[in-house]
Structures are given as structure tokens and as C-alpha cells.
Length: 417
Image (cartoon, rainbow, N blue to C red; front, side):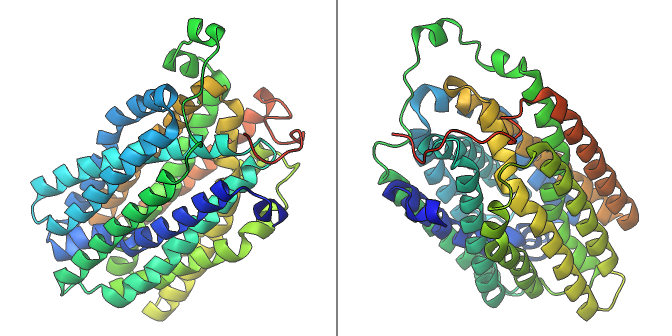
């Protein structure tokens, strides 16, 4: 891609750091609920509710993080968040009680809440509006390349009969956060505090101004539905679904996630080049439809023999990945199109809150319904949530300007000074 080749060294360094960090995340992302349930002996409901606890504690952190990003700049907050993430990730290796899991989960929640809003804000400020959707998409591609490779490596290392294998994975993941810290620390002159005009200082309504932006709040609700019944349900429910109902071993999870990643890595640039000039709202609705189809395929897969389950689940996760490629560009771009510069951190922190709410609802619903073997009802709730999200997304089209909807191209250019 010409834009990437012409990007500044800072942009390339940011993407390289994101790749290395996501490699560590891929080692541990698919296995936390399995680790708590099958290695540490927590019930499936308890393990799922620990994930929900992590999301709930994030509710207290996200608004504060948004304020701090606008006050001190995203880079400084991001560096602190990365260190917290490193400490919490290493601490999972020491967990053997529910109380310990709740403490580590709260620490991990703080790190997660503090890393995503400044990262997105920093990315939005590093390039101009024309390149911003592609930058978000490229970062997502790097993220998934690392997650996929990490998932494959994880499948060769992890063994539910050997707790030490999980310990090694979490310690390796912690080290990748420290490497990511070094990359972000090297980006001097990027992600600093934005100097506000006197008018912005006098009229700064903070989160009241964000909440009064009705277009953004309607967008946020549509996103909440999509993420709750998309990512949050997938992360919490898919490992349990395939291992408990599909009779697959934990080792098969890495290759299945690798299919998801492979589709994204191979197809992301192709998709990005075909999104320009298309309605972002209609693309959001398309994502909801794709994710609905993916869940139907995945849900049906566990009624077959293990070999067919693996193949069909991999096919379903590939369909989900097609939606992800669109979402990665459209989702954050819409938020940052609506955000005024002096409140960009708080707008992105609301996006972070959406993930927090979704992370609380998705695992709780998934864990309870799968614990009671209500598989059909669980899939039905997911489908209803996605289809409702598609309806809400389409209704947003009439409240956005053509430029915000992506129908009018931004002024040419590449990067901000």
C-alpha cells in the first residue's frame, strides 16, 4: 500500500510495536476462561463471571482515562497503561483462588481501560483524516497477525494437565508488553498534550458535551449491541462452546483463531481499498449481518462429529473475520469523525466504555446459558442482538453528514505535524 510506504517512521514504528505486542496477546487470549475453568478448577459460571467482573471494574476507570488523555496527552497515559498490563498479565500465572482472580482481574481491567482510548486517540492524531481509516485498518491487521501467530504457538505449548505451560504463556505475554512500552516510549514528539484555545477552555463541557452529542450516543448504542453479541460473546463463549459441546480439545482453539487471523491478514488491504466512498453506516449494518451468519454456522457446527465441528467452526470464524475487516476501519473512524479535537480522548473513552459494558454482558450471558446447556437460546439471543444493531445502524444514516458517513472524501494529505 502506497500510503504505508510513504508513512512516517513513527507510524511504521507504532505498527511494528502493535504487532509484537499482539503476538503475546495471541498466546493467552483464547485460553483465559479455559485456564480458570480446567486448570484452576473454577466452575464455568465463576470463570465467566470473573471476565464480567473485569468489565464491570472498567466502568469506574474509563471516564477517568478519557479526562486524563485530554488533559495530559495520550502517549503519557498509554505508557503507564502498558506497564500495568505487563504486571497484571504476569500475575495471572499466580492465581489459584477466586479472590486472587478478582484482584488480578481488576488490575488487568485498569490496564485495558487505560490502554485503548489513548492508543486510538494517538492514532487519530498521528495522521490526517484521509489516511485515518486505513491506519485503523492496518493496525487491526497487525493486531490479528500477531494474535494468530501467538495462537498457533500457544497450541503447541499449552497443556491443561501442566499448569506450568500456562504460566510460561502469561510470562511471555508480559514481556511483549515491555517491548511495546519501548516502542511507544521511542515515539517522541507524538501523542503529546493538545493546547486548547481560550474558547475551548471557557466552553469545555467535558463529558456533558459528549453525552449531549445525540448522533454520537446513537452510534454508541448501535456499537454496544454489535460488540456485546459479537466480540464479547465470541471471546467468552467460543472456547467453552467448542470444547464442552463440540468435543474439541483446547489445542484446537489456536488453529481456529488462526483461521480468523489468516483471513484478516490476507484480506484486510483488499477490503480497505474498497471502502473509500461507501456509506460507513451501511457498512456497519453489513457487519452485523455477517456476524449473524457466522454465529449460525458456529452454533450448528457443534451438532456434528469433532472433525466436522472443527471445519465448520473455522469456516464460521472466517465469515466473522470478514465483518471484522470492515469494522476495524469503520468503527473507530466514525467516532473520531464526530469527536472535536479537544475532546477526542473522552469520545474514545466512551468507545472504551462500550467495550466494558459489552465485556460485562457478553461473558455473563454466555457462561450462564452454556452452563445450563441452553445453546439454542444463547445463539438466538446473539442473532436478535445483531439484527437489532443493524436496524439502529441504518437509522443513523439520516443524522450524519455525507462527510461523516464517508461519502465525501476528506482533503488530501497524509500525516499531521
